[in-house]
Length: 132
Ligand SMILES: CC(C)(COP(=O)(O)OP(=O)(O)OC[C@H]1O[C@@H](n2cnc3c(N)ncnc32)[C@H](O)[C@@H]1OP(=O)(O)O)[C@@H](O)C(=O)NCCC(=O)NCCS
Image 1 (cartoon, rainbow, N blue to C red):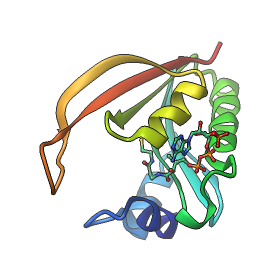
Image 2: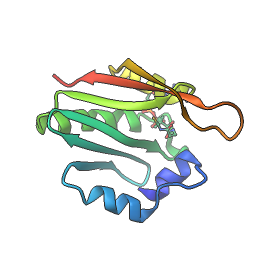
Image 3: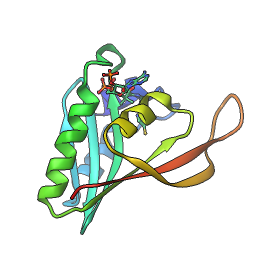
């Protein structure tokens, strides 16, 4: 998961294996995917939150992220969640297009939430989808 995350996000400090191990140790956290694409979610009571979703650059536009979202929705529903949430940078067109196509809609906006090395900080959009 750490390898896919690092390749997909190209962050200065990608999430480490230890961080993924810590997150997935929680009984509220579920992980989906393989060496090509991953999705991590936290499900508490009736709310499910996407912590991260990433597809390795070598495997993009093959429907892997869309399939992971569908698996996530079914699993969250089976655990009793009725709503799914996630945050996405307003300038992340691939992710935004993926989510809007999967039934999410904007319910909030966090101004200047994501630092950008080159240019001003990007807003975060809060998206929600019903699981009922
Ligand atoms: C966003 C991301 C997870 C999409 O993964 P993916 O496996 O390539 O996505 P899919 O193949 O399942 O695409 C499903 C749909 O999403 C949309 N989409 C995906 N990539 C897109 C792009 N580069 N531009 C426009 N739309 C895109 C399309 O509607 C696509 O359907 P189509 O291929 O039939 O047109 C991937 O680009 C990624 O890992 N990005 C870096 C990490 C990231 O930004 N994660 C989300 C943070 S909120």
